[in-house]
Amino acid sequence: MLNKIDIQKINNIAKKAGNEIIKIYQQDFDVDYKSDNSPLTKADIYPRLVPTMEWNIAARQAIVEESKGKIIKYKTEEFLRYNKQNLLNPYFITTRQG
Image (cartoon, rainbow, N blue to C red):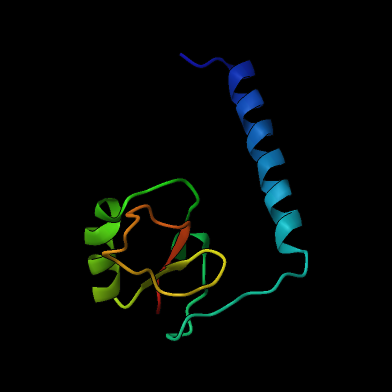
């Protein structure tokens, strides 16, 4: 059971966290928007910077593209190609569109 001291500590931690969040929102920062005018967030971009093989992501790519997203090469932003001689994928980024 929480005692009065524990509740005060938790309350102080919550206040400090809230103050840190307020500091972030008081700063200037750019916001990118998707085609539906909603903000682009970290949830909309997924970088995959570890080795994968074609079969690891083929189904993912079908689902992403069906939902109007795309999977592109990390450095060149070209679309991924399949049935290559070397089946290792380059690093890639999955993005969700609005």
